[in-house]
Every structure is written in C-alpha cells, then in structure tokens.
Length: 159
Ligand code: FES
Image (cartoon, rainbow, N blue to C red):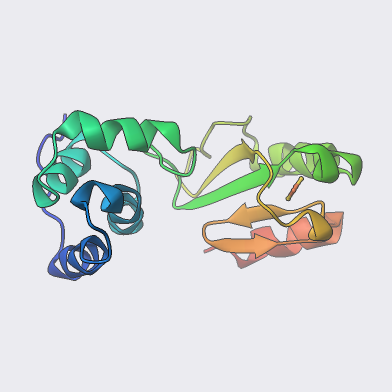
C-alpha cells in the first residue's frame, strides 16, 4: 500500500497559493486534493498524507473530504473518467439511454474501469448544466445535449 507520495513542486506551489486565499489552511483541502488528483490520477493514502502534511492537518481531516465528494477517487480509476448525470432533467431527456450506450460500448458497468485501464464510468448527481441535458462530464470537460452520435464522437476522441 502506498503510504508516501511526493507531490511535485508544481502541485505544491498551487496548493500553497490556494492556502494563502483562506484564513484557515483547512479550507484549502478540496483545492489541494483536486490538484493532487490531477497529478496522481486518484487520491491514494499517500496523497492524503502528503496533502495533510502540507496543510498541517491530520490525515483524517483530508480523508473525510476525499470521501465526501464524489469527484475524488479513493481507488485507482481509468485514465479518462466519464460521469453521466442521471438527475431529473437529464433523466427526462434520456440519460438512461446515454448510460446504456456507454456501458455497451465500454463493456463495463457503472463504477467499473475498462480492462485496458482507459475509461472509468460513473453516474453523477446534477452537475449544474440542466439546460444542456442530457449531459456528462469527461475528465474536466462538460459534454452537453448528448445524442448517440455525440457519445460515439466522445469515445473516439479519447486516447
Ligand atoms: S440534472 Fe443533469 S445537469 Fe442538472
């Protein structure tokens, strides 16, 4: 199990810049985890320990944030993360069909990663883009007004 993880200088600088914005370093945990996850791919125990040390917190104070927000992955996931919104607006506009298409194309169920480690598929609660329903987020990119062709196009763009 990875207990130690060395954050890069670039990530450490970004975390320090975030921490300076708040009266308490604890307020920077979410931003710190976002930068660390972008670099490492997921939030391992080593990442939690490194972020905690940087922000002068106990690891549990970082871990509780990492496990509260579903955009943080506490297990290894695919290089690309697709999160399909299945909340009300998207559900009414066909998100189930989008999800079924992705499951079939990728050969995985929700919460799983393809065997080649390329894509992980998740459901998401409302992502605040109801006007573009049905929609998903792929890594950090919103893809809205999805059609079957749009889903195929998205998958063809993933390396
Ligand atoms: S319900 Fe899907 S973005 Fe709001």
